[in-house]
Amino acid sequence: MNQKFTALWVTENSDKTVTRQVLERSIDELPTGDVLIKVVYSSLNYKDALSATGHKGVTRKYPHTPGIDAAGTVAATTDNRFQVGESVLVTGYDLGMNTAGGFAEYIRVPANWVVKLPQGLTLQESMIYGTAGFTAALSVHKLQHAGLTPEKGEVLVTGATGGVGSVGVALLAKLGYHVVAGTGKASSHDFLKQLGATTIIPREELVEISNRPLSKGRWAGVLDTVGGDILTTALKSTKYMGYVSCCGLVASPDLNTNVYPFILRGVDLLGVDSVECPMSIRLPLWQRMASDWKIDLTQLMTDECDLATLNNQYIDKILQGQALGRVVVKL
Image (tube, rainbow, N blue to C red):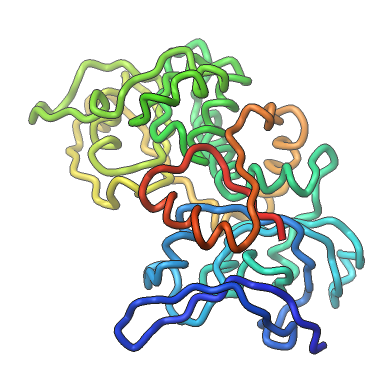
């Protein structure tokens, strides 16, 4: 099939810099796979921006098309679980990392990566969620499964204006939790209150600069999206038998902490990985995100753009920490 399609194409130069451009590719150039999908929407995540700027921790080999999210319709399939024309989505696995991703009009992937679009979601809505929304839902799932209930007290969400954080705030608020939003963007307070945050804390107050092994316990739970010193402080500030989920590293991948939160307060640190999340968890969570956990997606700050605008504006914006809410890419 020599059909042409448009894609974002990232190449590595001899001096190790990268060049990005929107160009035409052929379906024959896509990797092998069971399901060919005509992509209608994708979305921008921090990991996509890293891949688009040559980060070898995300993408090992270039040239490459980033985009860890894609939603569209089945164009061809060799797997009888799917039908041509059926609406589907793909998030995580190797899509957009080392397999040509969703910043293109077509992707071809293994059938085991593909999720049928749940009833109650449009293709656009599924990408307003995207990996960020799924990661937020998975974080809430793990916090609840560990034992966090609304009556136990305040729940802190760090990086609250980002993709994971904003969905996390809205979802926790919908489920009846007292949400405290941590952010470095003073202009975003109205946005966070609209999502359901009852209290907003500036980023500088989320970092404990003393060397005390523990701080006064405040949080019943924490949904951390940033890592680094903010996660360190959150652990020290979590109440007895509290729960902290960890899913991001935009502040730092390093965690400089001690054992006291764990051995004196019994705090649980819950790792959240949405990339290899098994279908036994992934499918029910997407169903919940389309039904009883569905948030008012119109409340999220959502920008919609094409590939050219994504390339020229939004990739650099998210790397500079200027992103607010979600960026959906219309192919």
